[in-house]
Length: 359
Image 1 (cartoon, rainbow, N blue to C red):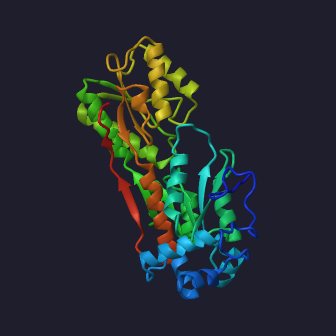
Image 2 (image 1 turned 180 degrees about the vertical axis):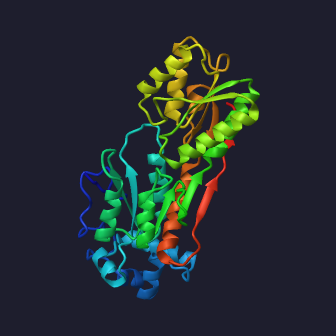
Image 3 (image 1 turned 90 degrees about the vertical axis):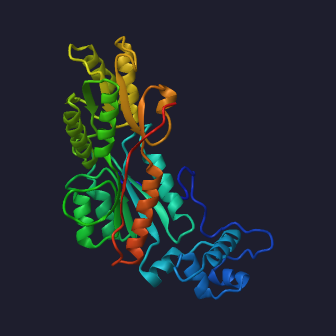
């Protein structure tokens, strides 16, 4: 079942009533309007409206003043009126899989998108879908109901039907990740090819000659990028390379531990492992230690992370930082640009991996 989480009301038992905004001391108990803010700031109603819409011809100081007063009086736009006047909802939908993973990027991505929209005319809704549902369902829902002005998606496939559909319909959207289908669209991605190349180089520099990669789900674009970089750089470094079968970096921890324990116990055990997620990296280290191996002596581990946790788990892990906050901020700004200026240049960004300093 499709669900919607409003960025302002997520986690609350019930949303505040639209008819009962907070009323600071000294202000009227009537519902505040644009005219209320105009009277308090000395600006015209039109200027107040444009300031709240983050219009480019309104100065930053004026926008800040208007937003401060709007917050003080508890102003909230009448969405039905806005939609009737402009045809817009002032809503951006972040469509994400509901798969649970305590170490995934979800919370960081949601926070960074919400932070980028703060102070603008836009609000965010999170629309989760479950693994057994068609990922196209929420996209079609948004299109058919006109329930959002723009859409953000992640877990991009090389040939992604969501991208094809939204591009064909002219829907403003941006993706966290890249497709490979010849469709020009806004995106921000982490260079996972380069991540694996950097990791292989570091492992080879530590003398590791038999490497293994725990890939992301292999249908996704970033898994293909990761595998390509891993295999190419392993060949360049003259080291053996294999892809771990039976698991991926999103697999449950117990499953990763079981598969890696069997691999470490085998006759051709790897002495260097790269993982596509922090949970997979930690599970692999636990499996190696359970097999009687010692990190940095018998094997090395490399992984990327969005939040600093791996060095606290084991200081010897090779860590590459992925700035998901930068990704969320970028795609939020990209979709706003696409909404407001349909013929604007498509915004695209690629973040390069950097090895974290050893703790």
